[in-house]
Image 1 (tube, rainbow, N blue to C red):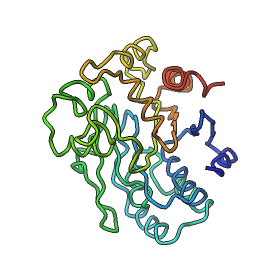
Image 2 (image 1 turned 30 degrees about the vertical axis):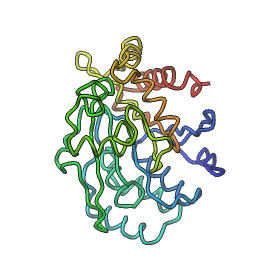
Image 3 (image 1 turned 180 degrees about the vertical axis):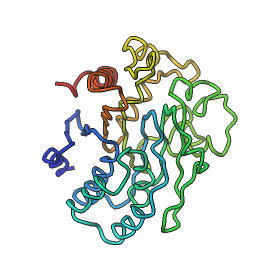
Image 4 (image 1 turned 90 degrees about the vertical axis):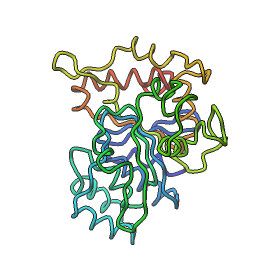
Length: 279
């Protein structure tokens, strides 16, 4: 990806090299669509990506009719960068709650799995399926935090009754299905973006949104899942290794303010990126 560093010249974007990967840090979640636009327009990725995202909210509100009309035009003819940046800034929800399905309408996103969402009623409302304006069907699932999902009876665990939904989740993640028991496929069959919304590591503390204590976060992610001989952090690190690109959304208001968002970013960086992103 020779052009990706050009995103450093755009407002609300900071591109960081991490080994052979790039991590893009930005503020508002809908700006992930700008990253996807850039990968298509400047890096010549032809096919849609899967999205695996950690988020307190599912961000799967159905797009407004007016934004769908614009996505129809953009899908037929890719717009200029200023035109697309204007779309994400002014034509989709400023609550950052409809970017996932707008990405599907644009043909940028194939399927999606959100991890750790406490607010996932939008996905439940559409029954894990969304059909875009071209008639293409997309799968979108919400699964619990990894220590529950990887548990023996969790959707990724060894003893769970394998429902059609669990099969779909494992297929999207390419993990622990009949072709690759206990592990991931060697290389992703469908490239994906791994995204972290910092508010996934927030909670309500006496009426105030606050960041998780790092000691508790570390304990949860480092506790071994016996049946799979792995930890939730191992799982995240494999997601990082296999991702085409990693994005991190700060979402300051939903983290409880600047200090709490910074704490969440620091904890995320420390636990999964060895503090390299803060250097």
